[in-house]
Amino acid sequence: MYLTLNHPEILLHLKGWGIGLWAVKVDGKWRLLIKTTKEMILTAKVNEGFDLYLVPIAVAGAHSYCLMTVFFDDDDEPLAIRTPLFKNDECTQNLFELLANDKIDVFFFDEHDRELLSWSVTGDLSGMRARLMGAQYFSIEHHREMLDQAGMWFGLRGSEDDAAAYPMQLVNDLFPSDFVILDARVNQHDFHGSKKFSFTSLAREEPGAYQELDIVFLLRRVFSGDSIYLNPIKEVDGLEFVDILAVGEFNAYLIQAKDSPNTQKILRNTIQRKRTRSIAQVKEAAKQLQGAFSFFKENPKLRFKKEGEPYLVDLRDFRRHDERVLARSF
Image 1 (tube, one colour):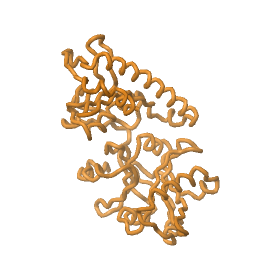
Image 2 (tube, rainbow, N blue to C red):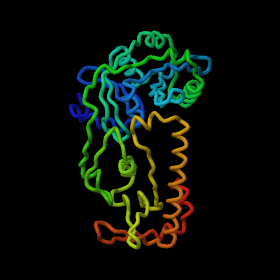
Image 3 (tube, one colour):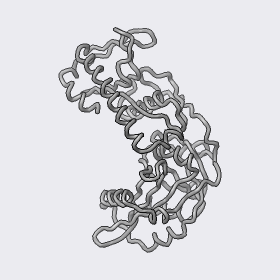
Image 4 (cartoon, helix red, strand yellow):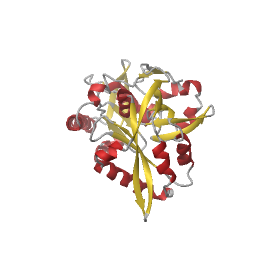
């Protein structure tokens, strides 16, 4: 079952939902929607499952739990989603209804509401249910304190805490996971430099173009398509100005995108190696941005090429505020 193919109306709700766990009833059955990053989704696929932790929380002498969904790309510092559990909260109650089952259909979505993985998983949740029944639940105004405590606890957890987690293991695919999504929506691809369509997939050997488009799609929620320029090419020398340029009424945003392949090999790298790679990418992007700003200062009327034809982007109003533009770009 590919959820959004059978129930496209779910996309209307997904747009308003943030990163996290969402229990919904579809065709009379509770199902789990996990909206998260492509790295967490691929880790779940590679590991053929994920783990649930009940993290103890204490507020004003009362004790409760925060649910953590953990994806072990690294044994010591895995990727995780923190889910506070509140009293008199519909989302929390829906999760409780879902967790009454040991076999759960799970649908993974990225930040652009693209369904990238569909699974049926199973695990023994009887112990979790017993612990949840005896807990006291806090009101939503304590959410920040709950999230902070959960993060601190998880960072200090020991082997006994890991042993007390609830593993959820893949039973079967609900839809084949080796597919590519073709998006040909006109309003999604009305920016400068668009090919009028785009592809995406969970595994990404060459990340650059995918990452740039993902950033454009995020910007498209705020800017009109006519204000966004993907890979603008300078007319003067035929070189790329920046990866993405977004021009608003009061600010211009110059963006260099850096990402790593989304593959099993990259996920299995150590945290230190990932950190070293990320720092190198930030330094490289900063150097490229400095070059773009130097060109911007000298040429506030930027002339680009689009399909072989010249066009003009006038940034003279922003040259007086170039330090502000620089700060916002980072």
